[in-house]
Image 1 (spheres, rainbow, N blue to C red):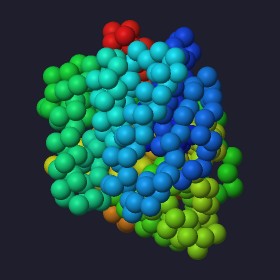
Image 2 (image 1 turned 60 degrees about the vertical axis):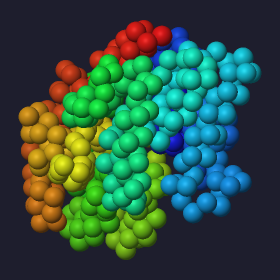
Image 3 (image 1 turned 180 degrees about the horizontal axis):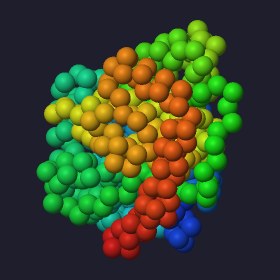
Image 4 (image 1 turned 180 degrees about the vertical axis):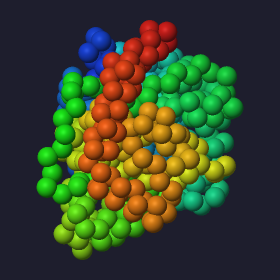
Length: 369
């Protein structure tokens, strides 16, 4: 597998890799540890992890737009190094577009099978954050590289439909569902209504505004943390202004569910869909479900539609007043929180759990390899 983050903060990749190890496969993950926070090599749950750090030229370049081509080359070279050392490679599994070029190079050189795991519509995800030519180039790059892929995995029906519009390659949806760890609903035990958000902190997800909003509310606490990217450092600074906001920094993937379970509700404020923004599903949705916690999510999104259909949370408009009303509604209605939380856990047990999704992943590997 090839992944452009350190793995420790990517629950999807960790879960997929561990599933393959548990099924008897040998798995190595080549990852990009931009901030040199972890060891160059270690074994986690039977997964061999090899980390590439920002060194030499990568260290002095101004941003990841310039570093990406060097990262692809380093990941490719590391893959060849593993192969030459006797590590047998049957499949290269690329997570998101910013790893796919390295995977294509390995496929051409070694004649291996190639899986493209599209967690996001990558080009649209970076649109507005990078110069427009970079967005266009990313879109063109995906359409070109996808021709070398043997099978595509993605996370939701909307993303599947988008990928079908640019390729006729086989596509399998493997959602970001979680393992069932709580058999019965367990109510939270907080002295103050507690919200949690552990994820990417970016402007589109209402940061840092959501910190100011919750910080000004009585009887509400917010636990927030996530990856060291986007607005991480600004959110860390802003959170210090409020006694009722706890910034927990980067949270390892195995700690996210226990932390979610301690909260009363989960926040997921995302932009509504547009022609520039593709719809998807998010880890937060499934984390809330398996923990039996209601979610507050944006109305009109795919995640919002699922929430309304399953009655496992509430939907709000993408503005401060609506978000505030939603938070206060749950704060002041413990019985509603409990009802929605029980519905969430019921949905996880019946349909949205990793036991179901992992069978799809293993089926893909049987077919491809």
